[in-house]
Length: 327
Image 1 (spheres, helix red, strand yellow):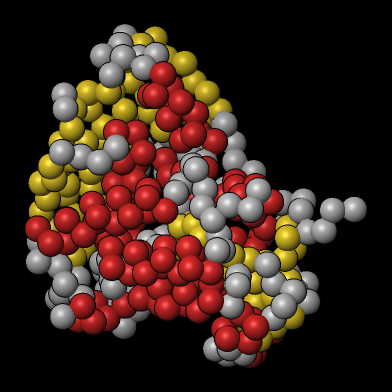
Image 2 (cartoon, rainbow, N blue to C red):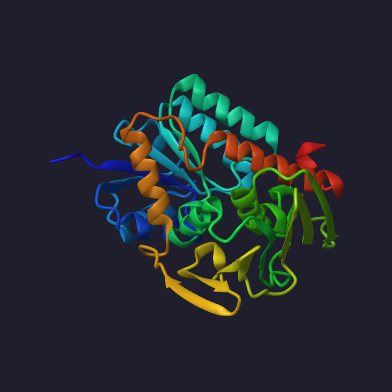
């Protein structure tokens, strides 16, 4: 019987619960260990998912010989240091997006992957969403002609949240851009590549973090209009329009369960449900890469993470968005 790939999780918040539930749907995966700075929190999380080992520090999990790969779900500002520490301990790493808070951090993480010859991937789960993968195939095939226009947004109301929390706190790399703006930028980058130029504007909260970001990414013969915000919700229906038709990723497009193709008013509806919430698809990609002895995925490579971060950096630079720890 093939041995299961044994996972560890650090940072046991809401997203870690979603990930753990989907991990149970992947047949060759085992959630072996979890860690929190609170041993009690680790034990509570562990009991919910029948975890073999629970730890009161991240370092203890990294030292656990049985763990093959670590999922890092800590706040943004801790991604770089904990990922590097895990890789120095010989662990493969799947780190939540954004991989780092700036290009310098992403470069350091990639260097650690190469130095230690271990797998590293940014957990940009939408890249492995079946609908988004299929739409990329259609775009790349030019079945509908070259793309002329792309629109994507991601917004929800968060101004009622604590200013000490990760969304509104500049010391935790808060704001809409790194948390949710990364998604529409990712979609434009996935479908169209690195833009020729970027125009952007933002509005800020009293704490100094941006809470609205509007971006125009310019490509030869095409524009992508993107938005992220914490001041209201948005429909979150993505549109990719070409010369012979349009494709719509259904609402909450980053976790879409289907897409529609519109050819001059004639619509084709396609349903492509995810397995579980959808984290299962990136987990399967990690397993495929580890099984093949790879340091990175061809579907979401180290270069992809670097180029995505460079776009995010440019938007921040245009709007003088500097976090206190970067000064």
